Length: 96
Image 1 (cartoon, rainbow, N blue to C red):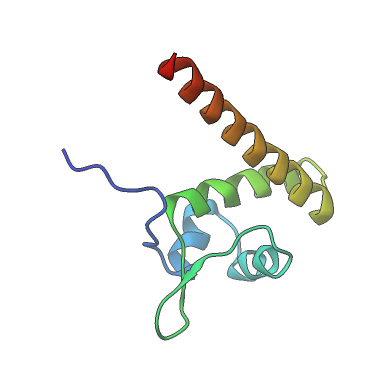
Image 2 (image 1 turned 180 degrees about the vertical axis):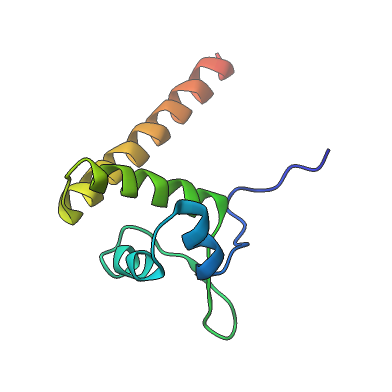
């Protein structure tokens, strides 16, 4: 079975919006506020990866919980930092 890299940009904005059940305008807003940075095709079309879709879902869930955009950005940054620290810890544990 072939495993896809979750960072590979696959989806246009319309498909990404459907996958996360958000309007395209919300995806653009999240991008303009720095919550994510989708890849761009040579023509400038946004392309979203599985990682982007996951991030959009997390951002939407936080927004639904009443967290404002600044708070969402901070929570996502802390989640990313936590993920990186856990990966580093696992690397350290397996190399010993």
